[in-house]
Image (cartoon, rainbow, N blue to C red; front, side):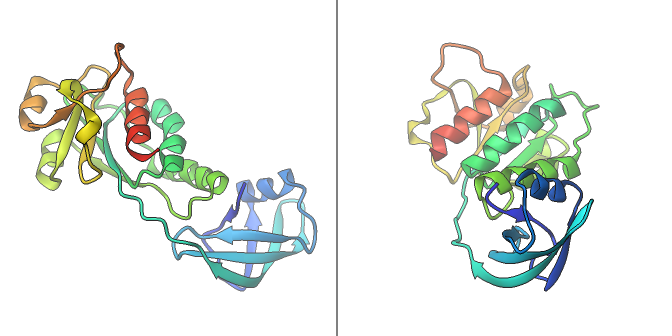
Length: 218
């Protein structure tokens, strides 16, 4: 863990409890030890000193702060809604690779009954950022269908069979990964640009989205 998250980071005194307190216990933190704490919003790293440790919480006092070098994240991806468990396993990888934004779209072949728990997604992303050192969270947006996605954004490119080679793709584009069943014919007609992955096998959507992020960012 490179830092501890607290939405109150920046206050003179903060109380650490629940899951964050468990992090302190796991690293065997002691009185007077200094801890890096961030709120993942204002670009600062706050150095706190542990003043008191109880059974379920710890009191920290601000010592000083320093700015964190800003990293510009540019890649935006769109992902047809799939099972939440699949998304939850993939989010940390996308966050750690530096994806800027992830847009979830209910496609024609998505399961409409899947409800996305955005609060849980945020907790997963916070844990990921604490581990990798990212000073911001991957942004998330949810859209009701492909038409709404088409109307709201430009430069959308499908990741689909028979598409062009990714060699000429740019970070200005939003790459749209479909559901396990693929895109419908109506969706293929709505978006007129597509790329294909250089793989002899059929990838699961979570494998495809990680492959795209890796190709464009690493």
